[in-house]
Length: 126
Image (cartoon, rainbow, N blue to C red; front, side, top):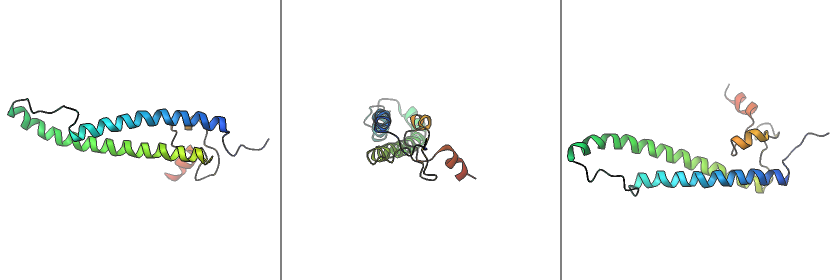
């Protein structure tokens, strides 16, 4: 039997459902991070005494930097998921961009935006 070169439409539909669910959760998390950065989440120090406010400002700066990094990482994840949806539509989803072979379904279920097989990813780190 010849080696499988692409996933079936039914398999692609399964991956699409996984991606859409992850995309929904990722977008929700991103929106929460954005809200905390813009201060629209109602968690401020306006009603606390000035002493605590000074102490919290330093922690707030660090927290905002970390939240910004998390938001950027989340946005990158969202873009990766959206790109995976495009690959599903093009029927190129699940094909390793280095080897041209199919990425195992188990890997795609765990990391649905993957574009490299484990072997290709590990060989690129050497």
